[in-house]
Length: 265
Length: 311
Image 1: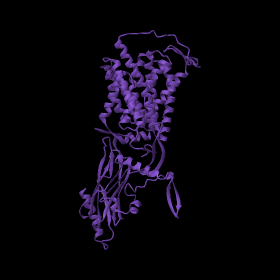
Image 2: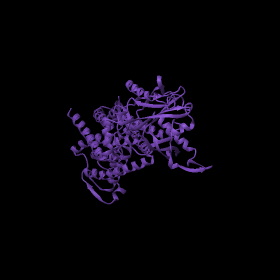
Image 3: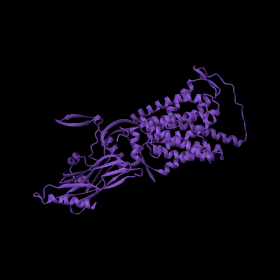
Image 4: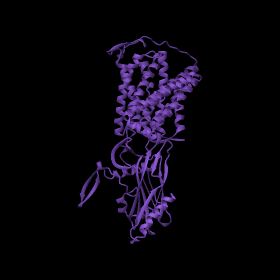
């Protein structure tokens, strides 16, 4: 890792010698691991995101956002019917990240302005959770706005997604997660919980100056099943019929095998 | 030691799973029950997704019923003709059940239906078992064998008026083919939705509705359960991809060993007291599931994936 850091500094050393010394900051980042493998003993993982910023000023802030693969979700509200809680009122959300974590050098509200954070979708408050089927666009006072057909309720539904994911540590926000080291170097820990879904992840590092993102760098991460877990999962999903036959055959083998072994004693 | 289950996609303690298999296997060996009706709720309690718990449990029942079915086959203590008719009903019931399962899952109601089925059946079975075993203990303590001669004369019932009658030589019955098919269908549907073998419904139905002699009831029931759960495992794998083979193997290993010890232990203990204990356990699981249905949930919102396993 140290050599990688050194390489990053060397690379970034070049533009510092160029003609425009102060104006354009740049961010480079790397991960301690670019592939996380889920094997039979997987119980979560912690990887380190590190890098360097050139032309960083004293008041600048760094924000790191890690986003997992997106999937559609259905959120249902439980309502009591005949004394029993039943799932009702489904709302379909599209392209919800399955993993989303934010780490920053200071609280997000101190780092960037509302619109800057909203534009980039930085922070659980600003993460875009859209339910297109329950939305329509209207022209109000000459401006096109998105209106939810279920009104204020949509906020509760969005909160429910965030709450649910935070419970499994799949959504996280820490204001102290990014550690600044000397000479524009930084590092942050990215915690992947046991429930981490497989897929392609993207980590964005934003440099904030005066409330706006002035530079950004991106690294990618892949989480995948490996070894026997991968073989079994793929087998189940590509050859379901054959998988079922194998499952039945194994069960018969064990059932009869045990009976044979124990009756011989 | 944690193990990551590839289909359930969660990490579970391996000794917990082996222990569950052993414990439920022990009980099923001792009482001659399948154990599916206890195992599936317990798997759900420890966090296995209900869809995976139900399908995987069907796979485990294939193993636990296979040795018994083989033994009865060798001793010829089963009615193959009746078993085949039950199987015809059971196979269609299993196919219907798997479709119903997929449909309910698409509505986001599968967890509710599984819980409701369990509360209903566990409540009835546990209650009846409790009353019956307490009664048996009381009778034994009074040491009065009031053995009333059971009337052998059969009343002509609705079931005897149904068409398509045929002979069942092994059971000594002359009966319509419709009741066995309907019973098989019902049990097959339950097997697919609840992840049970259905012996706890099949055996009473065979004795009280079909009036089969008890000597062939258990063998025939096991024969039907073996094939229906095998079919359910196969169909759930093919259609819903919800059978977790790693979870199934852990439960099977614990289960087959536990069942052997349970069968041995069962010969040396007082059956009635243990039946009371089993009844109380069944009622406890029923109460827990029932409570979860009526208690105000910690989170009023449920998040359901739309494309299952579509990574």
